Every structure is written in structure tokens, then in C-alpha cells.
Image 1: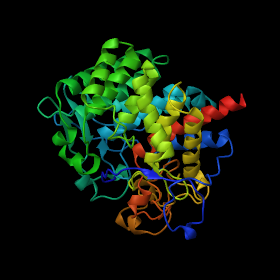
Image 2: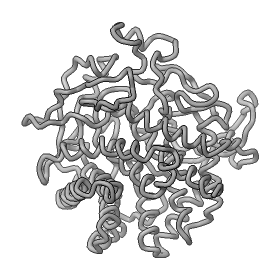
Image 3: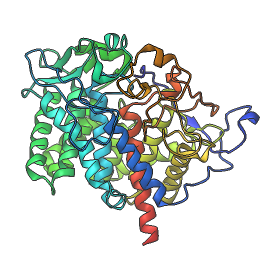
Length: 475
């Protein structure tokens, strides 16, 4: 679990020895070595989806591929006994945060919609659908009535008294909801966006399920728009870790995704109203679970072709690629919490922009995305993906994977061990290095070794985009 800290962005793209670093470079000179071939992208894409499988909560299916995971948290219930089992654990702990789970799902769905050929080539089309559906099934459970939605299961302060396997959780797991008296426009809006985007993913393969997702998306958007408020005012435990600073971007985000899913012009009108009313035309510095503006700008540019949105999307990507701070080895640097996540998310949204005319320089954006992912996969001297490449992280801050094979006991002694995790959390993208490209591979140093659902979201989708580019070049 990461503590929410919002910082501005910037870095550079230069490969030099760590020992010779004296300051953070402002302009790139030597770029990270690119990944060798599309087979590498396909393999890492597969591993990233395996990470999500390791994060599953609830009753696991018969085709579970994670041998050290089993059924867990089967007693998750709402205040009136509603079944809230399923969904994903947020990070190395066992709280289920709806806000970041929904944001993750939206980004995964966007990548699957944009670049399905990549998932087909990697043999992962069924897996990305399963990954998305594990979340959407849970969201539908949590949406117990039109204006009631459960946004969190588990309490962070209680959860963090336990270190071990989720199958052996012995803590209380309260559930928290939003309703008309305690609204959460950001949470309801982001979940509406996730369900609307997911309805597109399933439209041609499971139309009944697609329509079900869309119905819940419409209701949740109506809830978000009618009853305004920040979700962490209703779910106070979320404020310390996943605080939301506004909800205007989520309202616009949800309406835009509903327009894409339905082609109903009413949603476009409402998206554009939110865009103007909440002053979303200003250039953002980042794109992540709490700041959707760049995504709104790119998606509206894609859907409308209007110069206002094209110019806004171009301004964000040009700033990110040309002016944003970078480390000496070239990693885009926005925030120490989720360093790699921030870079991957920007790479993803600008790769989306590159696929449409009149949104900047497509080649420049694609080269930028390639460089950022190359850094993460080893171009900067080491891999930051667990189980992949040269010198990957071996001690991710992740309780379940720190446990030995059952029936051996697991607890706080495993947290303290200065040894690799017994279970390999394949595909997890760790928080990453600091602004001097330094990284500490120690379990207790969560600033470096934290793993979360949202850390892998944009990363997964940009891998798909880059793989599709490689496929087209070969063809």
C-alpha cells in the first residue's frame, strides 16, 4: 500500500554509470537499449497478467495458475450481508480499494480495445478478458442498488497488523460504501468508466455481459453526477492512501467512456460540459488514478477529432516527452511513489495519442514509449519487473509471495528476512528507483519495492501497444 503523495514531474534519458552520477540530467544524450524483439514484449505482457492473477481475492477458479494461492476472504460482506467476495487485493496487503481497482480496469480495458492484435499475437486475449472480468464481476456485486456502491473492503490499519498469506487472514474486514448521504462522485465515476470501457471489450464475445456492464455503468454515472462529493469523505480510511483531489475529471472520464460505448450524443454533451465546467483544458503534468485529465483529453481527441482536444493532448505529450524531468538514465520522473507507474502511464496515453492524426508527432511519442519501457525491462542496467530480465527485484513488498510453501508458517519473521521472496511474483512492476536511478531491493523499503494494481495498469497496456507496433513492422 502506498501513501498518496502528489509531486510535479520531470527527468532525462542518458545512460551513464551509477557511480558517475553527480546531478539529474535535463536533456537526453544516450538512450536506453531497446528491447530485442516482439517476443519479449509478448512474454512480459503475459507475466504482467500473471501478476493480476496472483492478486485475486475470493473463490479461485479451477484454472488458477498461481500454485501458492488459494481461496481467501470468503466472508467479505457488506453491512447488510451483501456478498462482496472477489475482486483484487490492492498491493502487498489485503485491502480491496475500489477507486484504484476501477482505474486499473479502465486502463487495461482501453489497451485491450485499442490493440487486440497484440493480445492475440501473445496468446493473451482470453487472459486479458479474464483479468478485466475478475474486476467487473466484483464491481457489479458492490453496486447493490442504484445509488449505493461499496468502495472498500478491509481496513488498512487493521490489515497491517497481519503479515502472511491471504488464505490465513485473521483480521476483521469491514466494508465501506457511498450513498446519497455520503456520495463519492470520483469513485462512482471511475467505476462507471471502467464498466463502460469493459462493456466494449465484451461486446462481441459476451453481449449479455457487455450489456450488464453498461447498465451498471450508466447507473453509476448517474449516481456520480447527481450526488456530488469526494469519496474519501465517505470512506475516510482511504484518504491517507488514495485521496482524491477532485471529481470533475472522473465525471468527464465516465461520460466520455459512456459515449464511446453507446454513441449516445447526450454523453458527449455532458463530457464536454464537465470538461469546460471543471477547467480540464489546462495542461496536466501527470496521468494516474487521481488525475485523469490527460486521458480525458486524448480520448475526446480520438472520439471527436476537434482541434481543442487535439491541441490539449498534444500539449501534454509534447511537454512530457520534451520538457518533463528525467533521471540521468532517461526515466521520466514525476513522483518517488510509483516512479515507474507514472512513466508507464504517460507512455501509454501518449502511445494512444500517436495512433490518431493531428495529435503531435507519432514517431516521437512511440520512441518515447519504447525508451521508457526499455528502461523498465533492463535498458537502464537492471529489470524492474519481478521474474524478468537482468537482476530483477527479488524482494517485492508483498506479503503472500514472502511466504514459504505451505504448511510452513508465515508471519513477521518472513517480512524481516533479508532473502529473496520464496514465491516469485511474476510480472509485478515495482515502484522503482529514485531520481538518481538508485534502487534498493529490500522488502521493507516499500518506496522502492511496493507493488500495486495500478502500478501495472498503464504498463500492461503500453506493452500491448508496443507489441502491436512491432507486429505491424514485421508484417
